[in-house]
Image 1 (cartoon, rainbow, N blue to C red):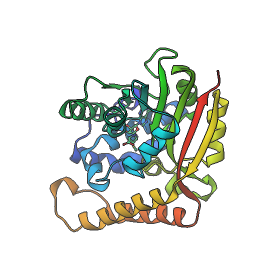
Image 2: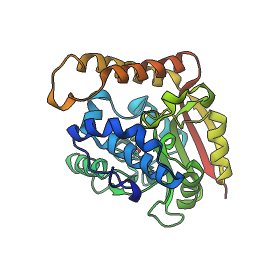
Image 3: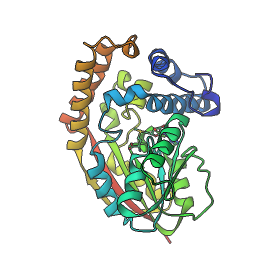
Length: 294
Ligand SMILES: C[S@@+](CC[C@H](N)C(=O)[O-])C[C@H]1O[C@@H](n2cnc3c(N)ncnc32)[C@H](O)[C@@H]1O
């Protein structure tokens, strides 16, 4: 956790992650709001940068996979030659799809150095480096000039940003007039969360700071973006949680050194709690399309 004050993700190995997890909730109680916010960003990026997470989310890091990425790309009109910024690009799945299938020129930005390295390697392997590049950067201070993109996409990352207002203003700033924003994100009725889910383990699982759909739309509109569509895909979230539950059950009976030290019982308990939220209609997944007011 030594890098938390810089907001940069610490380098995380699989065994390092097992050590990191018990300290996650401690990070959430950091004294000032600035250190709290840095600790959350740092932990979140470190967890998603770990190869271990891929064992629990083998089909990718956002609900709905490639199908929902294509749907989002249709809603915001990503076509050949479009300049696209993917914020919270993770392993590069969305950016690579948009380049390969749509012929877009994509820049992916992520706080985690491990994610950026992995995404660059994937672009190289797939022969897409001429269309896609990846950089380390913070959604709340994007390292790009004003009006430099046609589209900003962010999949399953907005819910992890401590300041959604600041990130939304950054989206609007880097978009050309009438440029579009496409978010896919977890939505949630926050009053349905108890302290357990609200802890940083919840942040990392993309749950604790998710917002209701109407609030997500208000945040974007306050940043000068006009929401053109909000489309719910709650079943996609239920399916992802189901896969996580199945992975936890399978992995806990395998004695792999990289899994030692993980608390499977607590992981399954949190996943079950999240499944209940979705079943009860208190959480789900949403695609939101918006455009920058001219
Ligand atoms: C759940 S993963 C989603 C990754 C990718 N969008 C996908 O759908 O596969 C969330 C990603 O957001 C990144 N992230 C979290 N906070 C960030 C921030 N403030 N700025 C940039 N990236 C951030 C994390 O490092 C992580 O890679």
